[in-house]
Structures are given as C-alpha cells and as structure tokens.
Length: 562
Figure 1 (cartoon, one colour):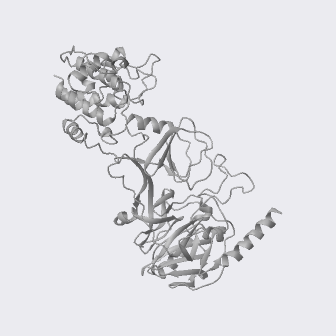
Figure 2 (cartoon, rainbow, N blue to C red):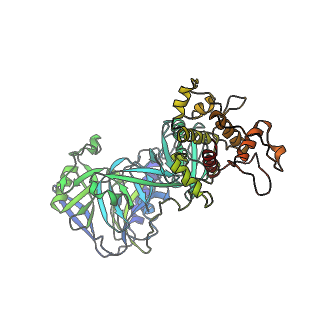
Figure 3 (cartoon, rainbow, N blue to C red):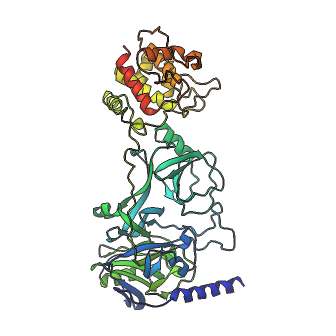
C-alpha cells in the first residue's frame, strides 16, 4: 500500500511539474551525444535582463523535501524558465518515522547553499556554481566558511550552518530556515542575534528552534571557555554580523566569490578550465560516484561563450566531461544524480525525478531587483560617547586600553575586564608586565584562585591584593563592577604603587549607602579627581560603571597617581 501511494504521488508530481509550456528568450531545449547516449540538455543565455540563478528550497525550510513542482513553487521572484535538481542530501531517511535531528532521520542537505548572500548550509570545500549581484556566473571548487564578526573586530569562524555538532569545541550557526527542534546541552551557550545586535546569551536547552528573524550561534562548552579566555566571547548589546568568506581554487576570482548572491553546491568537478577534472581528489569516492562508473547523472556547465548548459544522462562522469569539453564547456560540475535527477524547461518536465527533492537550481526571469545584504558593522555602534572620545584616544596612546576593550564603550564593564585594565595600567605606568611584577615581589600566583574564573589576569591582580573574591570562593568575573568596587580597587592599586594616601572624607548625599569596606577607596578617588560624583550630589556607589567611564578613571589615575 505504501509503495502504491508513493507511485501515485510521483505520477501526480510529474503531471503538476509539466505545467504549461512556454518559450522564454534564450532558453533552448536540445540533446547532446554523450558517448553514444542521448542526453537531454538546456542551453541558457544568461545575458537576458533580470535572469538569475536562484536556489529553490523545499518548503522554504532547509533539510526538508517535497515533490519537484512544490520545490519550484517556492521561487517567488519571477518565472522559472529552467531548472535542475540540486546537490546531495539524505534521500534514504525513513519518511514513515518521525524526522528529528537527534535521530539523524531527516533529509539533511550536504551541499553548500547561499541564498541572497546569506548562507543556509555549509558543505565545506565543494564543487559549486555561483552568481554575483552583477549577474556574473562562476563554477569552481570553493570553501565557504560561515563567519560571525563580533564588535566589528573579532571574527569567529563557525564549523557549519544548520548542521549540528556535539563536539564541545564546536561553534555552529542555526538560521530560522532550519525548523527542526535541536537539543542543545546545558553546558553549551546559545547566542541570539537580531538586526546585527546580540540579544541574548544563555545556556542550551532541549527543543531549541531559532525564532523568525533571528540568527543563532551555538558555542560548545570548550569553545565558549576559550572565547572567554581570549576575550572574544559574545556579550548582549554588542554588534554581531553573520556573513561568510570564500576561498576558491582559482584565487584570481576570490573577490567575486566573496560577493555572491547565490551559491549552490553540487557533487564534484567535471570540467575545470577546459580540461577533464573528474579525478580531482576531493570529488566523491563512493563506488557509484567514481569517474568511470555509469549511472543516471545530472550536470551544470558554463560554455566559453558564457551560456549555461543543464543536462541529464545515463553515463559516466569521464564520458560526460569529454563530451562537454567538445561542446565548448569551460567549467562544469555534477549535481545529485540517480533518482534525484530532474530537468525542467519552459514550463515542462524533461526528466522527472523518482523521489522528492530537497533543493533545486532554478533559472528565473525576475520581476524584482535583488538587494545585496549589508554585512558591515553598524556605524558608530561600538564607538565611545563624544564626551569620552578624548579619554579613549589618550588611553590608546598611553597603552592603557587592551584591544578587546576598544569597542562597545557604552556597555557595563565586568569585574574580569576591570582586571584586564589594571594589568594594562601597570605595564604602562611601570614599564613592566604584571607577571614580571609578581615575580619581582616574590608573590605566589595561583593558577585558579577562584572556582568560577579561568581568566588570565585575575590571578595576578588578586595576588597583588588589588582585587578579592567572594566568601563562597567565587569571583563572578562576568558580573558588572560597581562604582564603589572600582574605587577601592583603584585605591589598592595606588597603595601597591606606594602613592601618598588621601585622608579627606567625601561628602555625598548618599554617603550612607557606601559600603564600609569601600569608603577609603571612594575618598581616595574623589579627592584626586580620578572619579567624580554626580551633578545631583550623589556618588551612586552601587551603580554599574561602563567601559568608557572605566577608561576615563584609568586615564585620570595614570595622570594623578604619583
């Protein structure tokens, strides 16, 4: 019964797929003799106005499948004038069982997909066809890597897009095109990005689905610990831009590949620079995918005159490559073959697939103009306030400002980051590193003085007596630092440098709110003008201090601690 229903479904698909025939300009259905076998081919002039290569994604949801006609119906930008099946996917999953990521039972797409400049799937170093926003078409082996740029200056290379990794060292991206619930371990960190701003950083949980309009970045536990260690961790409110970088085999086209509108991955290279390339070591090596194995094949090529050729045939890759070169093809790749082979021209099916498809490569005469996505960091989003800019410039020139703190100046500085500032201050003020200073003072520096901190400079600042932890043995490195705590740390820093003590008492209207341990610090910093009170006569001891405010205090301390 199940087999009967499948046959009926495929027959219905063929009827719908055929549609109504029409003749698009510069689209010609033909045949080609490939080793004595007749191949169905389509020649396409890509110089026709508003003609584009568009990925058709089943159900508008990556790693799902649907009848070919349904896949093509997802193209809304214009009229599909030709199409061929896409790259490899898991077509052997059990459709009668529940489809879940955890079980691996779903039609996972293996090839690279870039749609409107946005990566939907990363297939590694793979044979692809791509089209720029100017309409130029390229075919090559290209490694496309998903990139997240944090704060405008920290680039994080993800392992993949919409592919799940259980390795704790992994960083991967989930887009809202991937609609399967994902079980993310509580030890991982889930970072959400919307409109180029990090909106949340939270622990993983079961059944996570990326909300519409959001990009999710998942850090495995080890990856996140390393990001924290090297000050490259994502922080709520900071900028984050999701884009990609491309490394093609033909490096002369690197710039073009990094400005693609569309990229669709195939299986392997057939022809490269007018020569047979089926023996390329990175082509698939399965028995039925070897260069001289015969089978049902589909292919896409670019002729020397700029036209594209799409085709299906029962042959071997080597035979196809030789025939394509004889026909004037400069570069060509093969797509998924076998029962996935599909070819469509001018409203009619030429080769009907024997299964549902996950993706298709569609040639579309568009009625709208595509807009290239803006992958730049928002201007001014990470810069200091106008009243803080001169102090930031001074901090940079004096060597007081670590590179990882030279951005997102309006966000609260953390306890750990304040320690980083102190380490930079000591080097700038004394000419010696904090590590050397601790050795000179014969101080014992514990590698992990606090249970919750693996931060590099915290143990050194703690050994100098400038910072302390909490009674429970924690340091709470990512907590924002309060104004009164910054004040007492600065006084302890001055004491270490043997600066003259200040004995005056500050008079603020909220002086009673200053904790007893912090009073000497508040008196010290306000007497020297390192920190000031507010216009309303308060000190606000429990208010947080921002990065730019902390930088100003460090510049003032540098100039006033003698």
